[in-house]
Amino acid sequence: MPESITITDNRSGESVEIPIVNGGVDANEWKKLMPGLWFLDPAFGVTASTESAITYLDGGAGRLEYRGYPIEQLAESSTHLEVAYLLLNGELPNNEELDTWVEDVRIHTYLHENFRKRIHDAFHYNAHPMGLLMSSLAALSTFYPSAKDVDDPAVWHQQIVRLVAKLPTLAASAYRFNKGLPFVYPRNDLDYTSNFLSMMFSIAEPDYVPDPALRKAMEVLFILHADHEQNCSTTAARVVGSAHADPYVTVAAAAGALYGPRHGGANEAVLRMLREIGSYENVDAYVERVKGGDERLMGFGHRVYKNHDPRATIIKNAAHEVFEVTGKNPLLDIALKLEEVALSDPYFIDRKLYPNVDFYSGLIYQSMGFPTEMFTVLFAIPRTVGWLAHWKEMLEQESRIARPRQVYTGAATRDYVPMADR
Ligand code: CMC
Image 1 (spheres, rainbow, N blue to C red):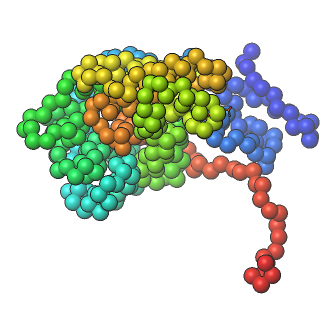
Image 2: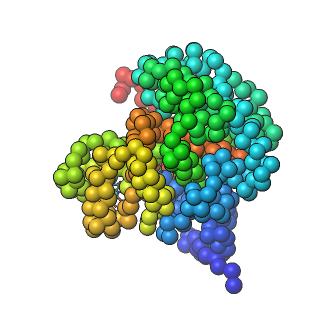
């Protein structure tokens, strides 16, 4: 017998039986029984905002899959652009499809010169690169007005290629501007990740090539960050996209959500926290402050993962490979001790708080030479693929505009009071 739930409206005694499909129940069914009665679920704790076939996440088991492929296998064997193709199109590409996709991305890496000369230059000299990136994404919308045609899949594809191709260029450009370094043009003879590292770090070398171990680590980090189903920024993308805004402003809105320290900004916050702790000996005292409610342990906890974050496990291994090239990050000992103390303390055990993706990624980024302000930008580059995959899926679903209800708790109707009588 198919599984179902029954809801009874005690005011009328009427009931409705709703089948459980794919682990969810259709709210439209109970809407028929109880029109005008809203389900209060701030922060979407128990609300599925959409059906999606992109990413599967089992928080209890610590499992993450893109289009059915376990994240561990993709991190081990794939490349970021291949994963991007998979997320965007549903299947792994064959040779020819991959070549076409990589070539499309490769020839769209350049930015209009106005970005560097006029748009970036308009910012304060020490502008946070995430603010710069978000503004640049919105600005791209004005360079590609045809993107407003959200009814045409060929137009979607064109903007997807542009965004995936230009993100590393925008990100590196924001960094160079922030540091007062000359802009490095994209090198289309390099692969996606090497080109990004070249735009970031090359100074005067005519043929900069990154260390293979660092390039591989970057590739793995991009894969791990590419999608994570209905997280805060992806939900922002789906909400803004549901209004039929163009993909550039849609992705800009998502980047704004990612910027927050509870979300993608956490990797930056982890580094600041480790620096604040300062030494191995101070870890216990810091953990006590967290337990006392004075601090949050940044890089710990997750709304969905209640066992372990599989991305954190992969990143921890990748960190050791990076440190073999760069030397050990001095903050690593503090991080390891913090993890050990937290994982054996009832406060964290009872609340099922484990290291998340951001706990170790910052240490890798720092060792590779990225300044702290770039960490969330490094998250935004691959996550743009996820935002776009969800934006495309949302348009294919012919979704309605996102428009939740509220439970009103304000004043009852009253008459306007003239100023003299207040
Ligand atoms: N440190 C200390 N206590 C915590 C933490 C933490 N990092 N996270 C949650 N708690 C406690 C919280 O105080 C609450 O305790 P109590 O029940 O006594 O009130 C309980 O655990 C449940 O927390 P919550 O705030 O209801 O959990 P949430 O699902 O709303 O928040 C979270 C999830 C990720 C925002 C939160 O765990 C957090 O702020 N973590 C630190 C920031 C962070 O690392 N974010 C990155 C998330 S993963 C990558 C990404 O999404 O971008």
